[in-house]
Image (cartoon, rainbow, N blue to C red; front, side, top):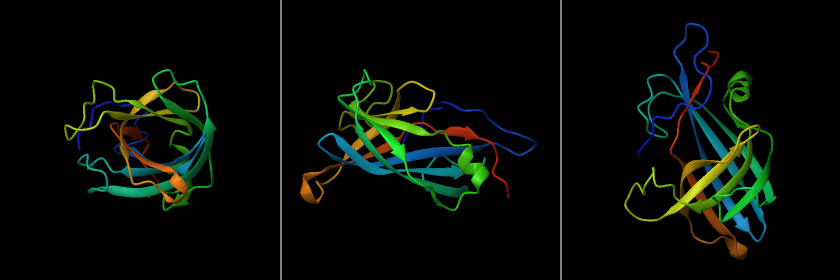
Length: 167
């Protein structure tokens, strides 16, 4: 998987080395409603750039539910979302350091990313509380769920620097 070298959030605190976070988003879309989850994986400074790879510190998953919105100019479909309670093994301070997802969208893949496998042109978009919409990465369609809901996985193209987790 290709990673772009964008550093998005505040970095290191104290004398510890910075950690990294990446977010994969699973969506189930039915009409104007979306359900799913955003899963953040935090990695130590030894991380090699592969999701699920070495240096994994902890994982935090937030269920999400949302309704259609039209405020994403680059999206063909978008939803404002509310997050449910976190599940995972991250300490509270590590979870608090993560940006709060406020919306998800689907649209054309931004040219800077290109398709990692040379196929597909679908992109995923996100908006975090207090920020504008940005390209999240690649959007991969899955098999339709029971009841005809469309399934999507938004794979991250970015990694965010994070304050080191308490140990």
